[in-house]
Image (cartoon, rainbow, N blue to C red; front, side, top):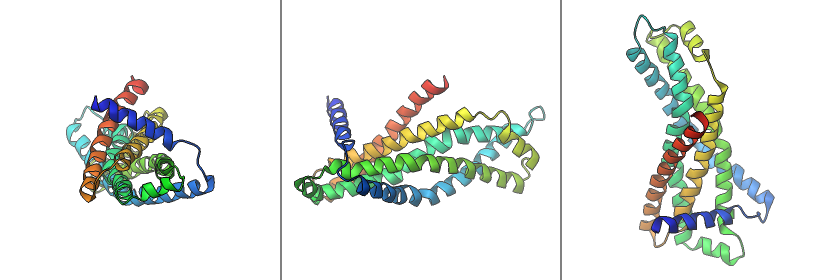
Length: 246
């Protein structure tokens, strides 16, 4: 019963979030601000993780597929598909759920316990829409960009270690990442990233918005936000994969 209670309250919050904005220009400025604060600020960690993950994947492929009967092009071919299909969308968004989700939950939770949200409501402002809608829209716009950059950076990391470690020749590596390329896989990855961005932001905002108590509860809300964001991402990953790839 508690699950249905939280689901109902979550969807009621979404209805408030996507009500008509009071000031479109102000909301637009907030979207740009949130894109910079939540998305662009995460570019560094995205680049580092993607670069090293690309190196690790190509090393694994070289070790496990090192067979004279298997062409070296399949090392980079498999690395490309790993990055496009799962790592740069699902795994990266799981990492961002920890960074961005906790940030959103703690920010909104602190506003709740310090009665800033109550002050907004007293002034007749739809606090849910004002605080959460720009975050959701901003993340849904910027996360697909981060995912796309992650794919390219991961491939660059793979190319770097393949060259330095003499794992694969550059001709074989470049041929492999172009071999049987399916643009639909990129579409699939971007669709997942948009859905995951929505889930990370809305679930984290939900836990922050309904925080009760003091600073201790803000920390608890941040933890719950990260946990439930990751769970919903994994569930959505299965459903989207089943729908789009089966």
